[in-house]
Length: 252
Image (cartoon, rainbow, N blue to C red; front, top):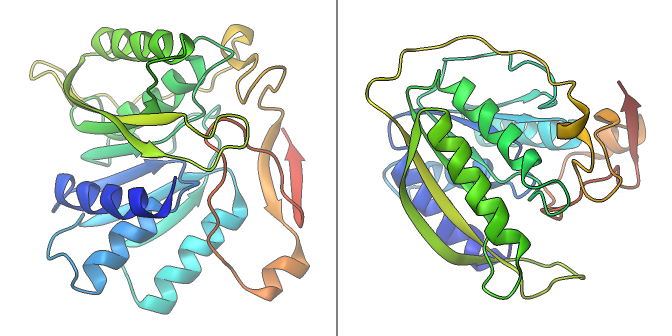
């Protein structure tokens, strides 16, 4: 996500989740840190009461932890987690945020799994923001958006608001591709749930991170040399994620 869009997105999320416990299901764009830091610096006088980042990239998790400790942000932390596993803290949050792999080659199945984990985080009784591709010229984002909204309704959530085409990215293969915010709310009759199970279905896992890119890597481990050098925050592509230099993929 481009820098200006990150700032606007962070302010929006800080206001939307004000005073609530917020789970990030993946955070390659470091929006969680931005939200916490805007509040810490007093640039905004609102923000979540607790922020936990769940990501399978150890470098991201360590960076969040290091930043929180350095800036003394006690309510920000990270948890190493892969979304194909059962969610470790179902029902402990009031809202969730996810910018998942966009599902171009799997009909949105990757988006739906990240959203499912977010719904589990709030016990199917909270609200969420889903960032997903939104483009007038390409067909696949329309199909994925339709599948995501259908999945939300089937799961007891409705689309409260859709903020169309508000983010841009540094994508070499699609520099003009944009994304939207899909704001979801749980239906009032939903009963709290605390159940989460791992995902093994081949139809969901096939092409999960792109064409012929299933989630074979459980965690991306940080190499000792890079860990000693200190943690930095980097933003990656929204549609594919692979182990970068200095990282050690750990197969499940």
